Image (tube, rainbow, N blue to C red; front, side, top):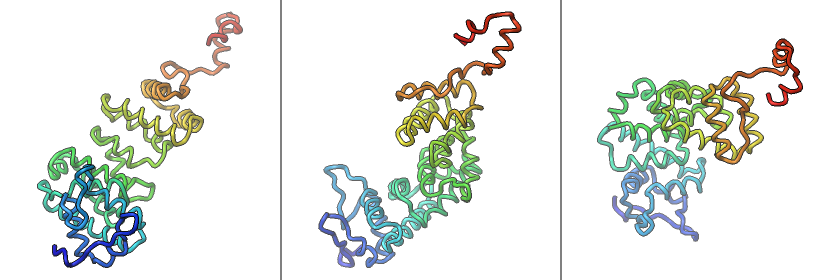
Length: 286
């Protein structure tokens, strides 16, 4: 890259003017992104004093400009090109691939949606083969983490079926839950299947985080209402775990007796009278 070809224009606050990216053209943007996301930017050098992430500048630029800006469209096309090149070279991916995924995990890249849906579908169909293709389970998880942002499992989305399949795969079930959920209500809807497939070492910690986020976002009253309405069919161990998570986060329990059978007052009265006992004494402690 010849530094005389183009020089970024900075605004008064020190950020790059998106307009100059548009003027640079797609070829320059692709080359620039490949170098920057590899950790080598001759135009806007990385700040080594604060260990600056190579993707941070691009994330800020996209959020500042907005998806409708022409510069964002150029960056989006350039990112898709980097992803395509990475898929062709896998498992020996280019040095920019990790930071390209980090970028996609933080901000929407419209042109990348189809790429992530395709990878998501392939992983759902043959997890072991795709793990080998990408060089291990950790890199595969990073792709899925980005797919949560780029290809969420909305009701009408092409990615929905793949996320539903991955919900049943132990090592990917928590990522699938994230891909299928836009709210705490969504999480509770899929929680029974997630709990069944998630590893015991992981699920209590993840459940605690879900409850914490739900309480912070929706409030205790809404969270308890969702759990009581949608969680009646939950297993006793899941109900117990939810109660523990709520208590640890300073909220009331959702289920009064998650481990035992539930009886109505009418059924209790019938049993009491049948045994010739006085209900006013028994029901006081029932």
